[in-house]
Structure formats: structure tokens, C-alpha cells
Image (cartoon, rainbow, N blue to C red; front, side, top):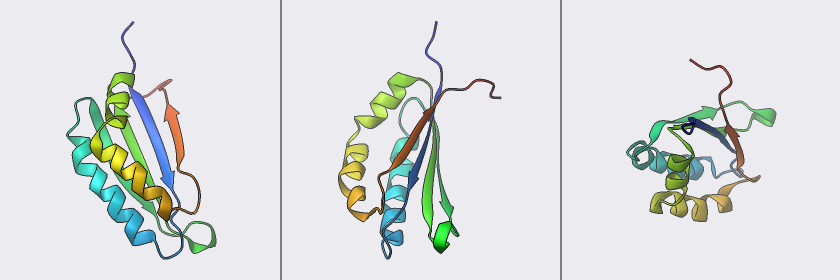
Length: 104
């Protein structure tokens, strides 16, 4: 049986005053990741009025299979982003990896 598509939902809560930095780091991931073989979707979203009026950022990602996701996690741009973004976050990155049950 072929590997199924993999969806990832990642959430980022910036430290107060670090919103622009977190946004810039995440936006820097969009272009290179969309060029990766096996990446189908890499979309960045913002929640402007979360709890206590805080902003948060969310990535919705789709890869053709687990090998494509593993490839993504080995790229230089991924390793660089992981090495720099955590210093600007108020909480650990929330990552949820999803498998489709009934998706169009």
C-alpha cells in the first residue's frame, strides 16, 4: 500500500513584542518549502485576536507522504528556522500531524 498524504498543523505563540520577528521567520520558510519535492501545501495564517488579544501564527502543510515530510525536516531552511524561532516564542511549537479519514 502506498504511503498516504500527510498533513501538519503547526502553531506559534510569539513572545510579546516578537510578533514581527516570528512572522518574518515563518514567511522565510514559505517559498523554499513550496519548492520542495513532495510539498503540496504550505500556507501561513495569523490569528489576530486570540486569548488576551494576542497574535499567533499557524502553518497548514500537506506532503505527498511521510518521506516528503522527512525530507522537509532535513532541509537547511527547516533546520535554520528551528534553531532561531524558539527564542522568540512564548510556548513550545504546537505540532499536530494528521492523517486523512475522509478528505476531498
